[in-house]
Amino acid sequence: MAKRPKTALRADEFSFVSPVVKYLLFFFNMLFWVISMVMVGIGVYARLVKHAEAAMACLAVDPALLLIAVGVLMFLITFCGCIGSLRENICLLQAFSICLTLVFLLQLAAGILGFVFSDKARGKVSEVIGNAIVHYRDDLDLQNLIDFGQKEFNCCGGISYKDWSQNMYFNCTAENLSRERCSVPYSCCLHEEDESVINTMCGQGMQALDYVEAGQYIHTNGCIDRLVNWLHTNLFLLGGVALGFAIPQLVGILLSQILINQIQDQIKLQSYTVQHQADPWY
Image 1 (cartoon, helix red, strand yellow):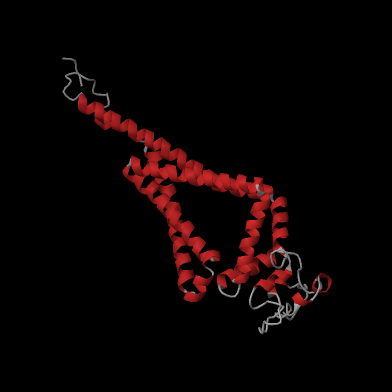
Image 2: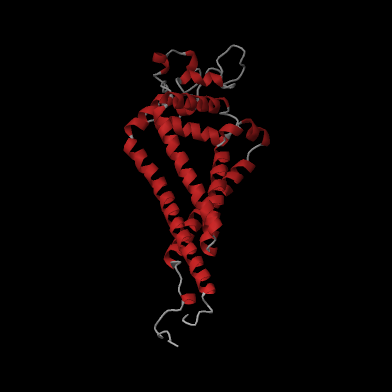
């Protein structure tokens, strides 16, 4: 009977599964798993500190709710990748790969549709901004977000500064008894570099003025046009950001598929070993 050389590697000692691929995918998912838990924690905390009535009133435009949704989705996907790679579980790895592929395709489709149907996308943005203006005083997070946008883009309202009449506090009708009637938020105001005293009431009564008069005190251009112009002038930056989101997703899909193939090869090797254990030449 021929004997196998001592230097030969036994089948049960050999593994197709690369530890580099396995643990690289594990730590890759672990990183984003931790990030997702932080996002969910911040979102939940932001929701809990709000008044219940205010939270329900602006549910559709709540940044905290968006943070929770994205965090939960990321948590579930990375959980499959993390546990699947560690336990070498093909089902979890396939679920991870499929979910990540769907997310990537949805992002790609959203970008293409937003570019092709730019007019409809503009209308949807106008609707979102209008809804945010209506609930400006109902949610502190939303208020800070709008103020930040108006300061950064030097704009006021959606199409123009008079859009703030949609808000019940800034409404410019005679029936409105609010002290902020016909006003705009402080973030719409123009500021001088040498301004020593900040006038937080500079937006008082600005909606009652025409564009020329109001333009001496506040930004009269709407944020939608400013946002569109910013997008057109920063296409390379946006492309870089999109690529930055796409590369980790593609890397995760590639690593998961490699690991799945390696696990399947290892299963075939084990099945072959079991079938040929009785072979005298084995």
